[in-house]
Length: 112
Length: 112
Image (cartoon, rainbow over all chains, first blue to last red; front, side, top):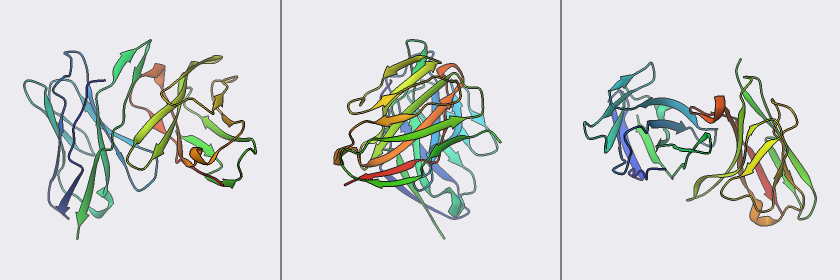
């Protein structure tokens, strides 16, 4: 996998945008960036992914820099339910499947 | 509803007593995988399966066995559990080993 680096923790005020950064400076040209989140000790949940262009879905937006060495996940109006650990991953195609390494992610605390 | 179902959700047992954690998915996914999650270590892959009767070791396979006799089921077997296997376990599945993976709700095992 391309190594990813995320801050250990972040706080965000309820109703404000939460911007979660991720560095992936060794990413290859055809590797996607995926974001998952894990609420408390539930199973990780897929949020969004992208290759080059910015992406948006009903959960979040993903901004990828032009050199693709970093990205930012944006939760436009954070709620208390968004308190979770957020993982940025770059899967490696290996033996016909995508091998992923989930690091320790960013623990986002949304504050009332 | 598309889901990955793990059972049991919680189990406290003693060293050496064989146990099986079941995992079932209803999405007709080819790929299934088991992870364990320990504080400070992120999610680590134990075993994975690309399809029926095809399994392979992940990063931390020691002390575990798996089988894939049917597409929907991928049980995790601990033949002789030890305290260092106390952990939170997740099963996941996906189409053809690609992202996104769909995770179960987790099984918390305590081996005394």
